[in-house]
Image (cartoon, rainbow, N blue to C red; front, top):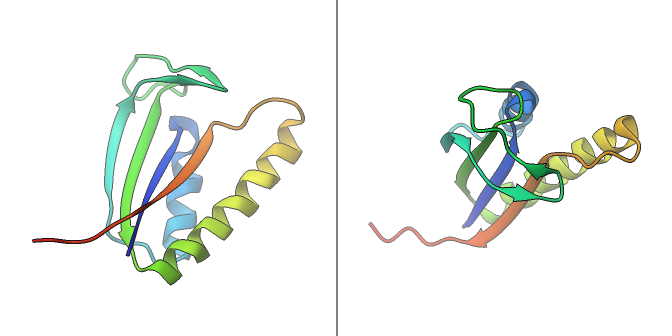
Length: 101
């Protein structure tokens, strides 16, 4: 099992949810108004602002994780193509995951 940690700007929420639905990920935890700073700069601290971040944690079987990662990779590549030199505010991390209870 793998834990996907997906961090993205609020304005991308609809697209991220559609992608997860396309890959049959229906169980996850979502955190709103997650703050931080990185390659796309600091996030805005106003709830549901387009500049705010969201974070999704999804524990999925390993095969599903890599299919979803492939989908996010294609999505991000398309966003990079559209935005030229601007960094894309979407990051996906994969962690080992073991359910213990």
